Image (cartoon, rainbow, N blue to C red; front, side, top):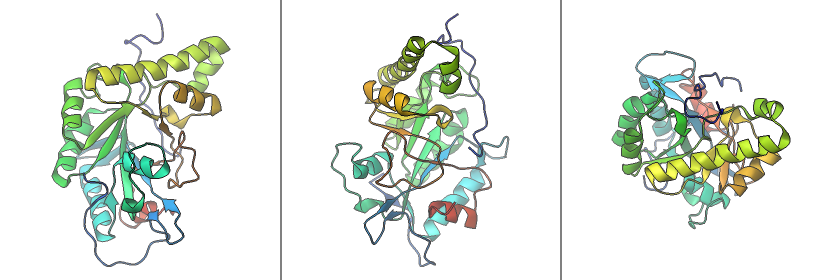
Length: 278
């Protein structure tokens, strides 16, 4: 059986260690962080992209962020005058998309992203996105949707997208480890495999949900020059890694860094993350 088949086992793995534009939660006086996210006095852009995976009322695994902790993180944002900006607003400021939005709206902002399409994204996160009117981008691999027991359904994804708060983008077709596949396949077969992973995901997501799929999250954060070029050739305009640092204007738009967020990221620890200090 081809490894591209829909019955491919779905990966469950650890990645630890490894609105209007810029909706503002509110602003109160507080001590200055070093340096604040968003445009600095010297004009440099520093925006943390936060990466979540699963949610729930209790901690079930190392990639789950509990609902109280997530709401506490929103409270830290509120207290420090941070807001949540749509991912495409950040890309526009970097020149990654052509919608003409400038970077001024990103002062003291973070961006929310969620990988994999776990069912708790719909059951636990989505109500909070609606309550607080927060934009988020989901990166999905289509083989799991309406198929794997841990995943959302296509109807749920469509509902989230229809809210106007949620963008649904690609996490490849079935979330392979490209390093493993490169060793397993001949060079020609590997190139075809990469193309299929990128093109099939894009095509299926566009067919099932509408809109344009042109953003990609690299599975396991694995990328290289060959993969970045393959993504460009497949029609992607930006892609995202799991390197822990804020996005700056100097970053390669095909490998933009993100912070994996876990349940321990709370209080001062989360504040330091927002400020790009950890």
